[in-house]
Structure formats: structure tokens, C-alpha cells
Image 1 (cartoon, rainbow, N blue to C red):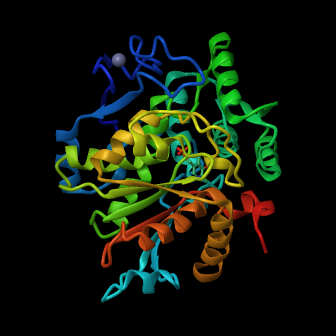
Image 2 (image 1 turned 90 degrees about the vertical axis):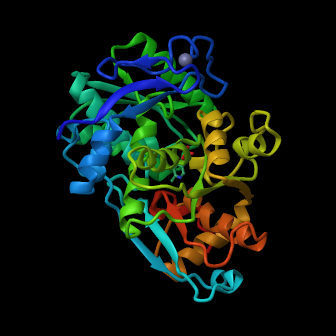
Length: 392
Ligand SMILES: *Cc1c(COP(=O)(O)O)cnc(C)c1O
Ligand SMILES: [Zn+2]
């Protein structure tokens, strides 16, 4: 299947770029980007929406929105994860819904490397294979690295990882078991991000840093397309999303924007951005209208522990356009929610992703989310990735 991707467009100045060439940031808006600030001049994948709309009517298929021809996907399949409805005790009474409408759960921890990151990696690996590039590098708090190591092995590419040495042990093992080259960075994820950019400048490779390679954003939209289809071709009222760099949030937003551009849907879902208390740069930005780094991110939710979110600007735009909201949760609330979700639904999720349930509970208590609304929890990572964080 040929891809319907037309071109990349800078979200700031609108300048267009040829996706057959390797592009990261806009060569004008991104010129004064320096590591340590949110990305500038991020590129958006723009498709032939008229063609997609026509073919969708014949047969709805998320692959119509794929930025790379699926022929180039690595052999190990990604996505098509389960979506189901279930009741969670305590939530139903708070919602006072009549008739009560069970919560939808999209369990993306069941991807091959155990996290949502596989969606972005699949497209980046496919892009490398199509362009004949044999080495990919990335910075990661853990899961992006596990994902790249895993799908890189599937596609037999050389993989180089920069990860903070504080990453959970199971994730560091996962990276090494797939034979990736692991550089442990003394310092934070933000330091690893810098190191990976430096490496990209001096090596003949592709960079998978999140938000930096445009297909990391577009890859993360596929779960949104699946949710729409698995929900019986209905747009949910709310999707609850755990947020670190803001790429999953932006990807889900892009899924529904793309469906709208293709004339398939009319309204967008509202997005609830859930962040750890100390890793709340996007939440503060949304509240105050001014960007500021999170001062000192310390949380057990390592996958959303980010000082400088790569996609801070686009995330806030997505929240405004979807009439979304932001909420902070504590480590204590995350650990409680982890046990509740596992005990009541059978879903064992890592702390970062179970933050969604903690955030939903708070949003219901605040009456931000109304009774009778159709709610989807996005569960992004498997609990076995970080068993040490469980408080039994
Ligand atoms: C990366 C990650 C997130 C956060 O995604 P961002 O795009 O950084 O906001 C949430 N949950 C899990 C399990 C992740 O791996
Ligand atoms: Zn630009």
C-alpha cells in the first residue's frame, strides 16, 4: 500500500519539506533551537486527505493514514492492541451516570516491547529502511530505548541508546537483551536528549528523539485511529493521557485532526493531560500561558519524568483546541491507582501510565468530567517493566 503522505509542514511558519529526504526541525524556525528548551520548528506530516476520505468509505483502515508504506514496517507487528469496557469501583458512583457507562480501556502495554513507544518506533524504523539508513540513535527515559532496541533487532539495524543510569533495571536489561549499544548518562533524561543530538551530528545515522523526528509524532497517532474504530466508529468524549514530553498527547490529537481533515468525523475528543506533580511543565504552561521548565522532577513515574517537554508548545495548542484540561497527581495517588486498576480490571500498568486512572478520579471529583460522558483511559506501559515501583 502506497503511503498517502504528501509533505512535512512546519507548525510555526508553514514552510514545506520533502518527506523523501531526512528532515527533523524546520531549517528556519528550528535554527535557534538549543537542547534544554522545548523544540522549535517541529514538522507535521500532511496527507492527501481527499484520497484517504474516498478510500475510507470503501474500507476503513488505519493504514490509509500511515506516513510510511507498511511494506517497510519491521517484521514484528505493532499496535492493534485490545480495547474493552469495564467498570471500576468508586468511579461509577462518582459519575452518578444513569445508565452508567463503563470506562473504555486501551491497553497499549501489550505492544511488543511493552509500551506505546512501539507505535512511533515502527514508523521511524520503516523510514530508515525506506531511506537505506542502517543505524538509529535515541535518548530515552527507558521505554523509547526498549522499543527501539526491540524493533531495531526485528529489522536488523544498529541501535545506539542514551539513557539516564537511573532508569528502572528491567528497562536497562530490555535494552541490552536486544543487543543495542547502551550509553548510560550520568544525569537526567534531558541530558540524554542532548547527548543523542550530539551523536547524530557526528554519525551517519537517523535520530529517533521524541518530537524531533516528525514520525515519532505521527506514529503515535495510530492508537487514536484504533480507538475510534474499536469504539464503533464513535469519537469518545474524553481520552485520558499520561504526559511527559507531550508526544502521545499530540499524536492522539493528530489522529482525530487527521480523521476530521479527511471528512470522516466532525468533533474532536476532549483530552485530559495527566502529569506527575513535580514533572508538570505542560500543566503550568496550560494554566499560566507562559512556558517554564519543571524545576525538579522527582517521581516514580519515570516515563513521564521530564524537565523540558519536547512538545510543550504543540501540546498546549492541542489542549486548547480540544477544550482539554490538565491535572497533577502524586506518587501516592499513582501507587494506589496501580493496585486498584490491577485488582479490578486485570490490567497491570507501569506507574506512568496508571497516572491516567489517578487523574480521572480527580477530574471526576472536580466535576470537570460529567456523568454520561464516554471516557477512554489510555494505558501506555506494562507493569512488569518496573515491578520495583509497586507498593504492596
Ligand atoms: C513515554 C511514555 C509516556 C509519556 O509520553 P510522552 O510522549 O513523553 O508524553 C507515558 N507512558 C509511558 C508508559 C511512556 O513510555
Ligand atoms: Zn518554520
